[in-house]
Image (cartoon, rainbow, N blue to C red; front, top):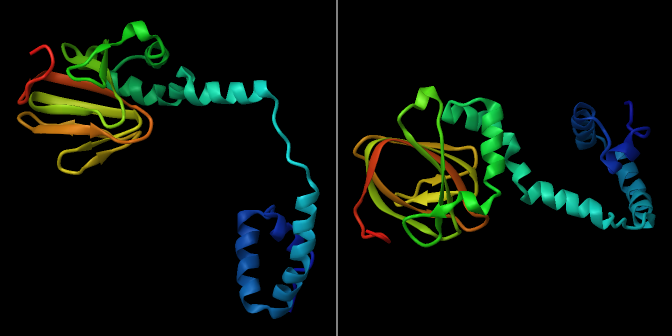
Length: 210
């Protein structure tokens, strides 16, 4: 029987290609010799790992990483999907995503913890109302009826409808004419959601300013 002595160190280091690793795993299942050799080598590989001092990345590297994770650029990957959702050019979608970082572009929503940023749509959505909705974790959007169709696209965070259905980043939710619901933002990051309405909504509950 051919043994795996020459690749066992790579197995322990996790550097084997997936296909070779799968084949090695099958071999180890039936080979006591290779399992014993693997057990013999493991302490030495662990000791090598302990010799490598932990590396603290420079502060500026961490700052750049956090800026990418938390800044407006984190939404850039959604540009294509937002462009299709609003029927606008992808370059315009990128501009809209970047503009979300400006507090001046936001206005209060119907209840505390909800903000709106109106946006324009393309010809395929002509005459429809569109906005970015931002809900703080735990914020509840009041119960309302859709007098027309509504489409939603979540980019960050998520929300749970009153029927228990949850919507997460990348998910789209369509509500039909006459449908009724309320929803609550999930815990974690604020829920960022694009919404397009072909019609109007009618709130069943008293909301601020009503």
